[in-house]
Image 1: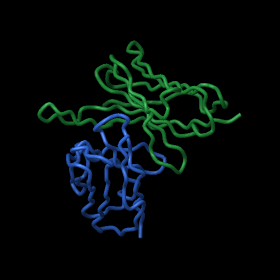
Image 2: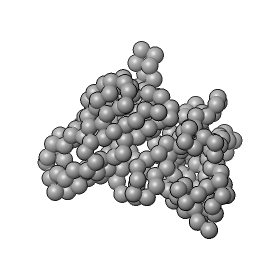
Image 3: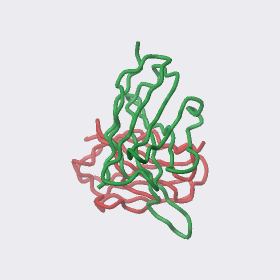
Amino acid sequence: DIQMTQSPSSLSASVGDRVTITCRASQSISSYLNWYQQKPGKAPKLLIYAASSLQSGVPPRFSGRGSGTDFTLTISSLQPEDFATYYCQQSDSTPRTFGQGTKVEIK
Amino acid sequence: QVQLQESGPGLVKPSETLSLTCTVSGGSVSAYYWNWIREPAGKGLEWIGRIYTSGSPNYNPSLKSRVTMSVDTSKNQFSLKLSSVTAADTAVYYCAREVAAAVVSYSYYYAMDVWGQGTTVTVSS
């Protein structure tokens, strides 16, 4: 199985801050990497697919980069509705695996 | 707009079989991968497996011996059965559609673009 490791596990930030979350795969996954946002009590929502492509309807302040084993999700200017938990997920192979999540909290 | 809705018992006794159904509305269950994912309280997301309308399903090796998935095209539904459950199977269970979100030079980039709202299953006597 491909292990996905996110850092940090949590972070505190203020509205307007630039936030970057890192995801590392245990082996190369090319660009087969997705990012999801999950709010409490809700299902995950697809933000980014293929490492850097923005899902329809997702604000452009979200961006993704990376290939191989190292990836980042950046929120350019944090908004109140962005406080949530973010997960990376590899789609290179089955079993699909997720990172452990990064909780973005209000400072 | 495709929507997914999970249904099934919220309480299952230890050693019994957990059975959930996901109903697809606003679209067809044909020609996509359909996934099950679970989230134990306070923990992260665990992929259980996926099924296509044709072909063999893919299961998480950690659960493979206990999992069965199926698709019913006549009802536009797909289902999950998890046998011999224990308290460790207590979780919110989600169904999700997986699509080829991008195709580049015959490489298919899959992502789960539509999710159900989730259903809580508790394993307890």
